[in-house]
Image (tube, rainbow, N blue to C red; front, side):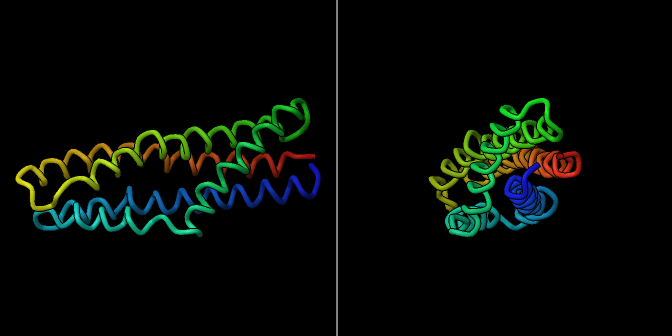
Length: 161
């Protein structure tokens, strides 16, 4: 594995782990804390997080990792048969589909729907409970996918030529 490819693989593995860590925090304690807040305060807090999460640094980690992982998957397919290539392909696709894809297909649309909920509405608490349960289930999946992608890319580094 060339030095530039090693560098991109290492940076991608770290970014996958970083993103997975953010999602892990939500899965293990943030959402539970929001669910324990009185009334619809959890809903309001999550709406605020969804408004402020779009920052250059977080988007660089989430989207940059997706672009790099897609490139690594292509490299893995093109270099098939060389040491580390199957791990590059598997790690890249795991992040692109399991973390980035799940985010775009499930978590973001749920966030968009939550944004339209008035916390003072009569059904706000029920809508929050439904959102929290579904969003957290998808978040568990993207957390695991990010961790698995980081591990697979690390194996690619270790087994590369």
